[in-house]
Amino acid sequence: MPLSILIWLPAAAALLGALAPRRGSYPLTGWFAFAGSVGALGITIGEIAGFDPGHSGLTHVTDQLWIAGLGIHYKLGLDGLNLFLVALTAVVSALAIGAANRRRWERPRLFFLYLGLAESAVLGALMAQDLILFVAFFDLMLIPFYFLTGQWGEENRVAATTKLVIYTLVGSLLMLAAAIATGVLVSTNTAHPLSFALSDLQNAGGIGAGAGLSAGSQEWIFLLFAAAFLVKMPAFPLHGWMPDGYRAMPLEALAIFSGVLSKVGAYGFLRIVLPLFPQASVHFQTLMLVIALASILYGSVMAFTQTNTRLILGYSSVAQLGFITLGIFALQPQGAQGAVLQMVNHGLVTLALFLIVGLLAARAAGSVDLRDMGGLALRAPVLSAIFLIVALATLAMPGSSNFVGEFLILLGVFRSKLAIAIVAFTGVVLASVYMLRTLIRAMHNRLGTRAESREIALADALALVPSTLVILGLSFYPQLVLHRSERSTAAAIAAARATAQPSQTARAPLAGASAPQPARTSTLGAGATHSGATR
Image (cartoon, rainbow, N blue to C red; front, side, top):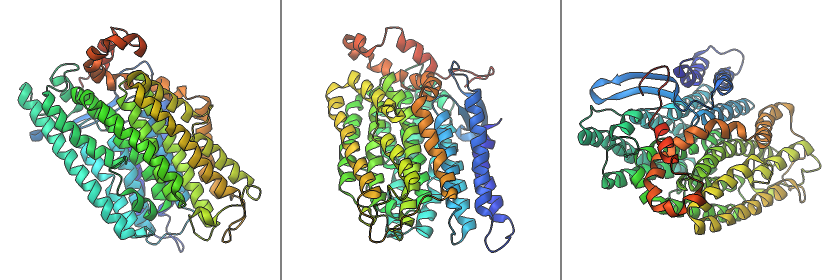
């Protein structure tokens, strides 16, 4: 099936809902948007079921020359690196939109249209195989959230929207400049026709050569891309928009924003930065690991000091994205695979936690403050049990998929930078502190003065239970993700590992990398062909 159908189905369904005539007192726009998301989820499940883990290149490739004079392609593809992030986007969007249908919104046609457009934009960014197309989808996915925050936001929504616009606009402009510079410099240095297709850029200078760019060019382009991605994730110290944004955004929109949009930044490092700028990735490896470590420690400490549950989850995301960045820039296969698995884990957990926060706020007169909650453990045992499962997954309890992801990340960092790995272990401990504190204060202690004690309703359970079941499923079988992403993840870091290999020769036995490894993964990273087409 063409990937364009998967990308544009949610937006098209939401648009149909916005144009559909009103029946009754409330339009059916939300259910159109929900149907579009479920349709995208069904297509994604089919792709997972039919995916061949032994296939090393892109599948279902769409490659049309879009703007010939500029060498811009409408190129889409699916592989092990983005397959489960696409699935994560479909799951999170479908369940969040389903939960949003439980509430009445002002101007519901526009509200659900923005949600559908946001899902389509994220899917496009994840499957884009052209640098300019990626930038276009990357910017498009932010536009709906400007309106969602500004029109349906809560506390200080104007200030939140302003900060969100400023931070992300600056990041987007830096990334656009970096993307244009990459295409132009590669064409100039290699005498190849101007093209922004990722495979053309990577192969222009030869396998592992960093797109034919000098070390100096790679370094300043790397910094521009890194700034854009770190703002989006967000990472310390580029997270200044996050507190106001997380306070103001509607919870259902925030579940999508935190669950999937933040992962696009981390994914960009694996899809674009490491394959195209391997020398710069090695040069700035320690800097990126220090930024990741600072995000882990800062996010964890700040999460422990908050009583606003939105901010607890926001700072928790800063810490968890720090772990993911650690795994990516360990430049080890184990770390990169752990990062991909942890992106999926964090998206699912974040969705469930924000839905739970919404249910708790409904029982505390709309308050999201921990001091207004409590006392529901015995009065709402089903809701309490779901919260316990999700909380234990968040703190990477052994037996959970999060434990596997963090273990692989720390293993990769241990083999790359021992000192940073030792400090990063404290992040695991701090996560248990702030998440158990949140669970105890929200569900135990005395019943809050403004809190109502009632069990979760069936309709709410239909939005929350599926995400919990997926979390449990990956806990029992994380190999579903690891096995299918192994080859593509190795290919993503192959060029950077090959660049770093001379300085790591003495540690090769410890790192578990044999001499032929870089050549094999570099071949994968060059972009395999599918159905006889040249990538």
